[in-house]
Amino acid sequence: MRNLLLLLLCLCSIMPATATKLAIIIDDIGYRLTDEAALSLPNSITLSVLPHTPLGQKLAQDGYHKGHEIMLHLPMQALNGKALGQGGLTNDMNEAQIKQQLQSAFSNIPFAKGANNHMGSLLTQMDEPMLWVMQSLKQQQLFFVDSFTTKYTKASSKAMQLGVPSLRRHIFLDNDIGERALERQFQQMITQSKQQGKLVVIAHPYPETIQFLNANLARLNDNDITLVPTSQLFDDVNVAVASLPNPTATLK
Picture 1 (tube, one colour):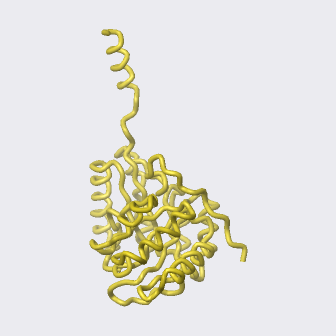
Picture 2 (cartoon, helix red, strand yellow):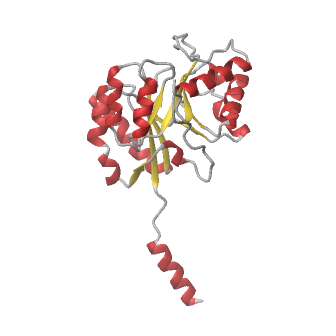
Picture 3 (cartoon, one colour):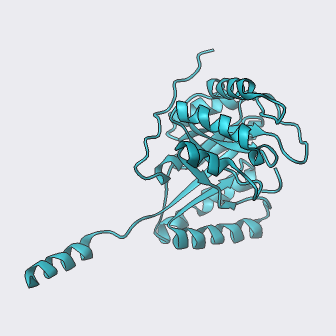
């Protein structure tokens, strides 16, 4: 018995503690030439790309070939009535229209393994549209990250209902792109990662954000935080392999 206890103590001493994992998603990619700077970030950062945008398809392809995990940044109707752009989901669409629009968006953004909502403070509150979205994702074995633009969101509950792998955003890094504000949010990101063990952070391809991350991401290692692609936050979940390419914070 004593030998067994000694063996267990030895094993515990050499086994690493559960790693603290952090996923950073850079979304809103696709419209601006400056968005290409997101490709300068480490490839463990996830890129979420808007569909049917001038640069979206190319940046998704380029990002994938650099080793980034790609997501679809899916426009959804907001309470403030802000224009969605092509490929958006609205509350006046029926089931067939939402599912067709979603399929078109995924066809436009190659290699996407999942989606998160762009805006959506109205649509994510609605039961049926969120159910239809999750049915489509379930069929293709894709995951969903709720950008959490409203506390009344139904996205996570509908994903759970259908068994769609889902996560929720914890921190927006750059609602304010001032140096002090970015540092404050970065420190909060480190603290919360250690407390929770897993964290989802959303940021944007602003030049200030890209510069700040490139200068500061090394600090994660100093805090024993591992930066991972978003899908690696799921445990024992069958997330689909990347799809083949098509040949041809504030209230949101």
